[in-house]
Amino acid sequence: MSDEIFRNSFWYADAPAAPATQALEGEATADVAIVGAGYTGLSCALHLAERGARAIVLEADEIGSGASGRNNGQVIPTFSRIEPDALADSTPPEQGGRAKGEQLAQLVADSAAYTFDLIRAHGLDCDAEQRGWVQPVHSPGRVKLAERRVAAWARRGAPVEMLDRASTERITGSRFWYYGWVNRSGGRVQPLAFCRELARVAMAKGAQVFTGSRATALQRQGGRWRVSTRRGAVLAERVVIATNAYTDGLWPRLARTIFPVNSYQMASVPLPDEVRATVLPGVSACSDTQGDLHFFRLTADGRLVTGGGLVFPYDYAQRLRRRIGERVARVYPQVGAPKFDFIWHGSVGVTLDARPHAHELAPGVLAWLGCNGRGIALATSVGAQFARACLGTPLGELPLPFSPVSPVAGHAIGRRIASLALAVFRWRDKREFKALQ
Image 1 (cartoon, one colour):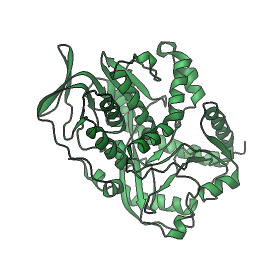
Image 2 (tube, one colour):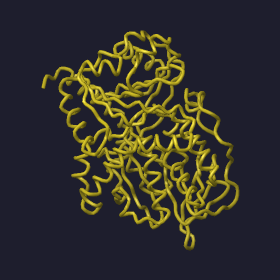
Image 3 (cartoon, one colour):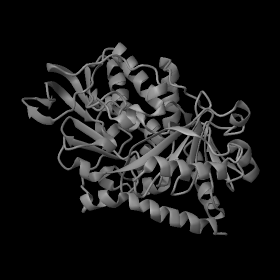
Image 4 (tube, one colour):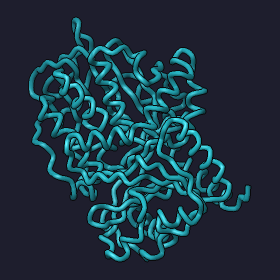
């Protein structure tokens, strides 16, 4: 059903079993048909089921087999490449202007707390740990950026704090970085376990999840939408397309608004207890300010889960073992040369403007794309907001700017060369290491 890379990940080996599902056979009816069993789709289904609405989720492969079950598991309540003030200021009037952009920024500021509250409320078994997320600064030139981010998120009520070099070392367990800042509402989860647990609870409350049921067509039929699969169909009043980086041709032009970028993840063998205690002793998760991102978190059994990107994917496993092994030795010399026994990858949904894009594709059909590496908290929160819309809340009352679908010119070429951006990021990182401003 799912591809071998997904099945060979550490998350797949470690997660509790998925709830029993089957492929859709024949015709079914629902209030809302949801395409994609990741965080957005399952959060939406859970919130709908709690309100008594009939929700059917159609998943092409198995629960969490897209980005939701492959990522690093960091729960981060920020944007990745755009600042909250810039996002608010640049939201066009036709999308609600600065007020609507500010609502989206606030949704993001609250997203990690929302996600962990949801986990606690439903007792989800997903190795959830909310001890904070830290963004260390990799060069002196980025200290001012960190200060601006702390000020911006603090204005939105986030529990953020600027760190000097000693505090950064104490929290991260590494002397590699200069300064940093921490958001105490962030943390980590076992990402596939979180996805499977969302499905379990949603199904227990009445939602239906069909796996091995790729949506192949979406058509208006009378007053409802018909979502077809190879062996069945769902008739529904409303549809949510929740496929992000794995968006295909179900809705014309939608896939040409986003760039799926490969992100590689690696899990080491369990670290010795005395070493494990020195890695990220003060927080749950870490990802720094570099374009060629350095990111780290531990698992419940003491594995270091990290990874990176590659400009060219050939022989990726061996190249990553060497490249990331050397990186770990620089950042955490106490770990030494780690042995990685799991390596896998998945796609991150990236937009050119670094913003998430929400769309009303047609009356009753909603979609969003562009997590830009912040998918767990944001997607869970957006799923809840889409449930509100499906239950009758006007779109203008949601904390999301809605925009028309606007395919990127030259998308096919851009998709082929997207990974080359990493080479540019690496060049900038090296230059910034020398900056003294």
